Image 1 (tube, rainbow, N blue to C red):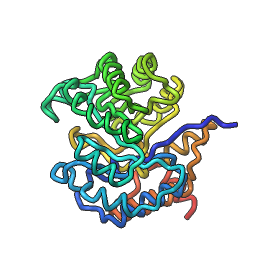
Image 2: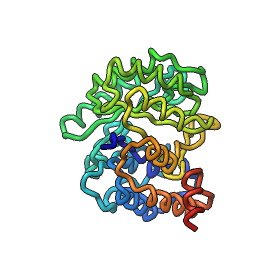
Image 3: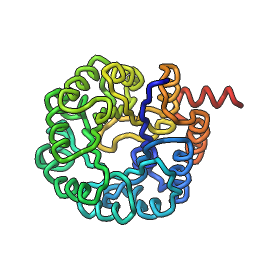
Image 4: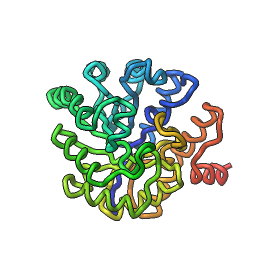
Length: 300
């Protein structure tokens, strides 16, 4: 029996949120439906934030109302406040995602408050999610490095992880928002987080590929016992607050890696290659996944 690794597909939210041209609601719905059909256990589908801040995500309610929900797939949305949570609850989401930086400089520069203050703001959202029986995930941005203060102290990541656990988070993302982390650093951070959370069931690796290190970082995280990873079909996405931060690691590349490692993901790699080529064509660019492009070329 192969060991199971959970892949969380984030393209519909994290992947599309920075696209300058508005992506039609129908395209977002088709993307989510195709990803669901390919076998993902979890799809990050939308974001219930102010349209002023993230115009691309203004149609979150419409998207959630139109998708064909696949039994066994969790549909997650980002909720920064109670207004967002109430909209998410009305949209019948399975999981809400809250977020906080492990970097004080990043927190101050982007939301004008400390890490502790930012996470305290999520207390009512967390309490409401638990009361409603909705799954809760906490995402720790800048876990490996920050565009303003450099390398993030490991103790700061552990501190935020503990705060999220106290809020009742079912899962915690260790996110390399600007893609600066390396394998040795990933091991240090994950092993430290593993002192307060279960690496196999509660901790996810969310790695951007800015410096081409994401796949090596996934292997390093696997070695520590992490069994949940985020990826984005065709490597879509980035971070609007971090200069030079390229997309998330490409799902096609991650699935190809997992197949080589003898890991079971339950996701159809051939279907994902097709989806990557399709959405990239719709966005008017070449697909960014090396494995995806190689497999598509072999097929054609």
